[in-house]
Amino acid sequence: MTYAIDIKELKMLFENEEMITLLDVRRKADYQANQNTIKGAVWCDPEKIDKWSKQLPVGQRTVVFCVKGGSVSQSVTDRLRGEKFDAVFLEGGLKNWIESGQPVEAAHYSIHEADIDLLRQAGVSEKDIAHSIKVAEKGLEIASRIPRNLDMELVGRGALFHDLGKAKTHEIEHGKLGAEMGAAIGLPPAITPVMEKHIRGGLSAEEAVELGLPVKDYTLSTLEERIIIYADRLVDIITDGIVPIKYEREAEERFEEILKTIPKYGKNDKTLERYLGYHREIQDLSA
Image (cartoon, rainbow, N blue to C red; front, side):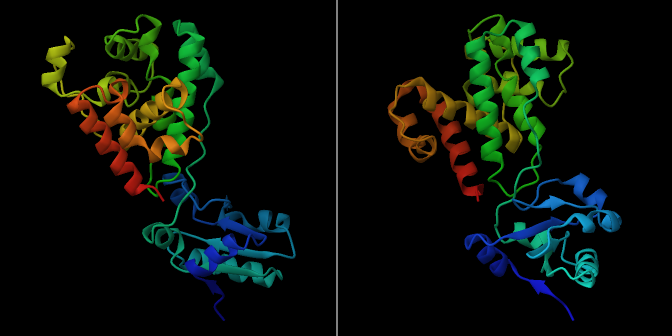
């Protein structure tokens, strides 16, 4: 007999706040390739079921899922039921869950104290460090709402180091200087471009000429980069005190209104258009 649960039934369990054990039993290679998962799930290597099955709580339903709801989750379910657990597998697996627009929890990434120490050693002020931490936290929170396979380390570290150049200046050149400093201290090549690109939310080559910056295309080419820059602007709105904000999500809800009415945030027509584009894209993608 097949014991399965569909997405609607799983969502109902969540909504009713029923106590369940949710297990991500994708094969190790699949899990390592994409660690985003359903919120509350714990990854268990199906090859080591003999070890971890003995540690599962008894007396509550156990829901397991693999990539597509195929042989892996079904065999784990059969094994657990043989051990008297009330186990079922999720039809369609994680793939179906994501494709139906359900939220996933971002692969675990936390801000490292060692990175904060790097900022201090570079000479970044405590005020600017506090801002950068807030941007990293906001970026990670936004990314966690998007059912995509995102590079959470890039989001977190890119946001944390985006203002590295402010150790030397708060002028517009801090982006260029930050990228040079980041390369010098050995930051990954995917992170250092964020420092240059965050100026005005991704300049065109023509705008770079006008501002006296190196002539290149600063377009934000990845979703991770756009999330970082969006988070940076949101944190400005939330923390500056210019706009009364009752709760953080209000900054997103009123984003277009705020940028269109307060020049500090919208800057100019080109910058405004970019930021509104990021906002709309990210809100449309968010679960």
